[in-house]
Length: 361
Image (cartoon, rainbow, N blue to C red):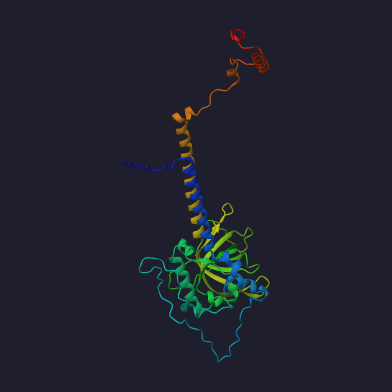
């Protein structure tokens, strides 16, 4: 008759199994971090090199001295001449539609609306005013957090200046230090824009050449003035409009990139700018929390298992007896020399009754 041994469910709370589970969780965490690192394209540039259209590579190839900051001057007209202004490829809508039929915000701008915009001209021309206020109204109709989540960091300053038409109407984010901020007059428009502020700021890669921004709202408490000595840290998220001309402090006419934004995000001195939240950061933080919880659970199980074993009968049987010096006082000690002498005497003395047995024989 054959008896089958009953299969028992393995205990996963033993120290050996707990260590194996912890190693498995740690290995999965390392693999996940490796996948995140390998998924970033820029981490492989050391092997493949940067793409030809990468802005950082373009910036390295462009000498800042080759940027054209001059304002385009048009010849004077004769008494019987006139200059026709370019018209946009499609008419600028009379009303801003910021939401799609699905209810989501639409941050896109049709580039054909800005075909009439010209670079390197002094200020905003009359035929560009309608497109400008359309962008101001569109940016004002979309929440600031939606604009910031829908954009990417701006290309390098030299790339924007040299390839201005390619970025016209694109949404971008630029960080820098604000030098000037003041309200400016609002022209009559059909989009309901009734407040306008002009700011000038320097980004980390623009050097002594500023960016210009036009926005309809300001954060509470932000410093204003023509010359801000403390130069507060700001972040601008807006639509790129054009290279606009302005008179510099040296009396020359120069150009600067113009952004059209909803408002300026200001970082007070007591606050530190929050880093751009990419998806990788969220995943890494989530993974760290999961590993921390798993590690805490395993440590808790180790402690509970040790306490349970300490109360078990097996632990009591395995306890060592008291081997202190006091317990050895009652033990009788024997001198080895005395033992050896006694053994020698026993070997020399004949056994009792041996003589009598010989005589009888």
